Image (cartoon, rainbow, N blue to C red; front, side):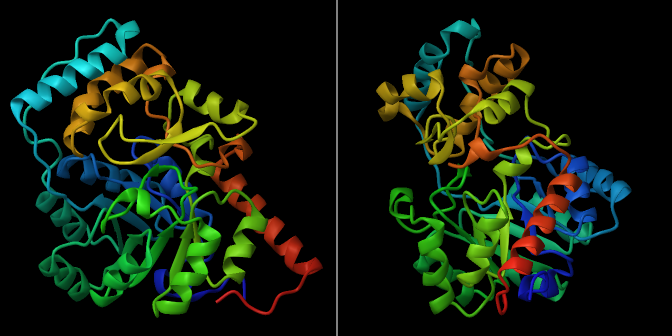
Length: 360
């Protein structure tokens, strides 16, 4: 029964609510507030160096003694010639002319060293490791298992979920097409992994024997209970936390979420080279004519990062990546503790009026 599920027991949390890892938004204050409220806070560490990870982890631990997760991106093959990088640079430059900012050429490495990031998780004795874009190397899975670290993978298809289960991953986040941010697809094309969450959950629950966590467009108690009824053992919410007072996003990004009245999101590779869902803006629209120049992730991501930082400085949302799910128009401005308390109250009210047997 709510709130006790397989996931709450495995992760030693009070509520089956996980705050999605969101780079640039998941501040230590947000993560700690979610964990202190009974959910699971998650640090998005994909873009952080090992030293930056340690600093963030220690800040979280000053604010909370509850479990929290660290999330990393599994490295993928990527390649680009100098000519391709220069073509991509010119396309980005032409698409953000209002910034009056020079887009420089980039050099390797395009992302922080993965092995160093993984070592921090072991050294800091993090209890839960979540990941996306694939599977960790077998030697790391073995190390984490020996250290009793729970592993949470991301799947957008049944094939991906089966692969995660075969590698003894403890839990799976099923990412529906409604979800904001990067698609976690790692087998085949990302466009082939766009199943809506209400269809994906029963498909995986029927075929997979480990707990499934639902993610994508979940914004209220009704969403939560409907997905638990379909067989999910927990839910992961991202967009709804973006407008919490502890969120680290730019004020104008937050305003765009709070003032939207319908779905204004689209899927794009323009910012990072990987398919992701975000609020449509000038950069996304202009890059549609330059799709052939978009580089593999994380090369494209490294190329556009300085532009996005400059856009933040200039308070210009036309050139920021504003990741958001399809139900972003339901966002509210309140603290993370207030949000979770409100969700819990609403769930209990629905159950009181419409008793259901169980959510495990």
